[in-house]
Length: 429
Image (cartoon, rainbow, N blue to C red; front, side, top):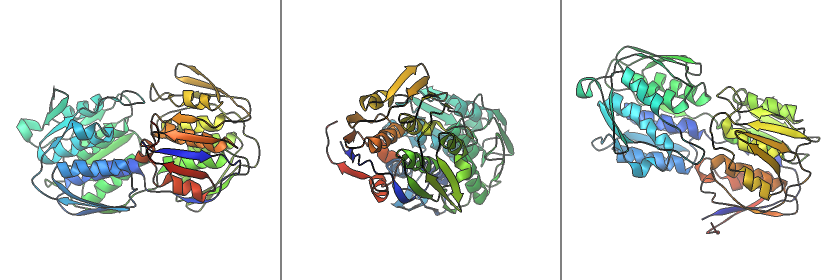
């Protein structure tokens, strides 16, 4: 397995870094191409493993997919096979996003249950409840969801669905299903993430009528005909990638980085906490400037659904707090098992005590290089950030295949900011 080797030079990060398109926006939009038989083009797509996995799934379903990052082209191919097998779904939980489009477009779907993942179980009960409200018959058989439209494969019907809790993929799945349902669908207590708002833009381009995407109530009027139109669209920037480089820029005093293409309005919760920690965050057009001119202060953080502090930035911010003065308390409310990076940070000299869903961090003057193991995508990023701070030492982050799911050309981008980093092929697992 590959590893990343970081040599801590003690030099602050400086320069510019260009943010790639948002993976978490691209994935549902790729699945939305199932609602059309026309030729769609998606631009500003990052070159990532999850994009390739989604392309493979769409090909299995019968689509003609060409990936030539930063573009992906999708059109009708062979006869549709409305089945997403375990072998593909197990590679990426977001594969469940084909469920809504398939049953809306073709009247039936067989999709493997995604199961849990390293950061905790993420059930799809809210997806299924919503589809049932729209007239679906749902059966669970041998690890698969078997879904049929009304009357054994008919058109879905508009309905009012109340989510028990905000769910990003649940909101997106039902938005896509409602885009071809008969009549009006109202989704209440929706996820408000920018990626949900982006999917709403796409569905409107395709001929559905979507209002309220990005708020907690979304209204969708399905298109009258049995399919939607194709689209040509450029994906929004990846706010989590942007946030990761913002934190990396602040890990060493003197850091001064322009994060190009970042939307500060989508990063306000992170920016607020970084400012409280003593970091200067300013907007420069469509870019964000990050400067650290003095010591860091410990700051308390509690993760929450958007527009709260994102769970996908918790690990990176915790790494920053490891070198801040005083105590900080990091509480995780979204996933029950998202502190697996803590033991690895402790190997690097971090002082962190876990108490249930809370990490209590006592800042230290120095982190040390070590061989550490990445356990998930964002944990990988936190260990790299810690490695940058380990001045005079070498850190080897192993199992970076997690990292390749969500960060495009990370070694190249970090190197451009002055980080001494290289990929090591076939490193010890």
